[in-house]
Length: 91
Image 1: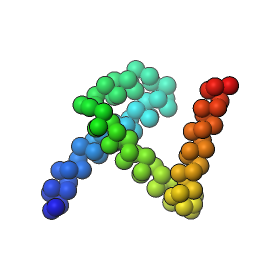
Image 2: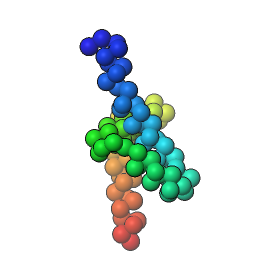
Image 3: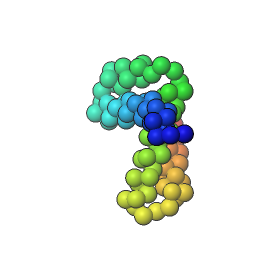
């Protein structure tokens, strides 16, 4: 795969990831309507999933760099946080 082909293959994933980041930002500022609009802008679930995966991978890599922890430790901490969020909502 040459550089132009690689770039063409990655472009839709990056665009989707930017939308996912926008959804996260909108939710963070309490803009539910904006988050809903962005969610509705995906062509299909595969685009959403690819964008979300890229955002997760880059976010975890940034966390790893900032904390100096291994990627496995960062993922483990994330899983603990998600589990705690479920417990808080159930309680």
